Image (cartoon, rainbow, N blue to C red; front, top):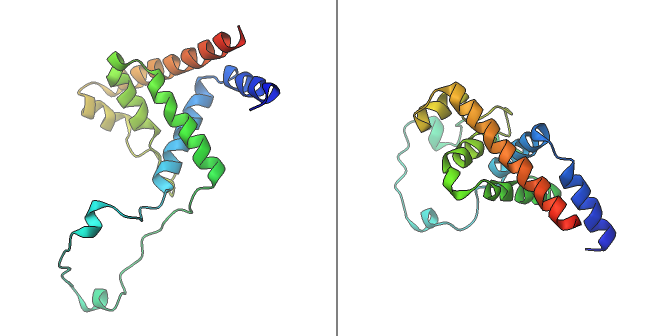
Amino acid sequence: MTASSHAIALDRRASLDAAEIIRRLEEAGMTLMALPQTGYRPGIRSSALDIVRSAAESYGWAPGRMRPPVPSAARISRMDEALNWFGLIPQDRFVLRRIVSLRAMVDPITERHVFSWRCIGVMIGADHKAAQRWHANGIDLIVRALRQDCVAAIQ
């Protein structure tokens, strides 16, 4: 990375605000959920007996599930960068990290959040309004950490 491109990247990071961080995290969540679920995994090795429940299923006439398009390489790179931001929330604030990561999950087909505020509140055992406040605190921690990185890199 050249000095000028490094300076441009630092300037771009310094200009990130809370709304942009939220947008980037939601895009990362959508990209993560759009990645193909194919490839080798432990479930492939195990065998299972599929029971055909109707004649239509045996002929393959079951309705197909809509799948989102495979994300581009640039979008995957942005996802990797944004998902690294969770590490900017301190380890002792793991509840904030969990809330921010749960809220970042967005369905790529419907573009709706997978976890509503009320659902997140139930998961952490708190009111949904508290979950919203803690989410804002987590985003603020990310914004401050990114800005401190930029200031430290400039000096």
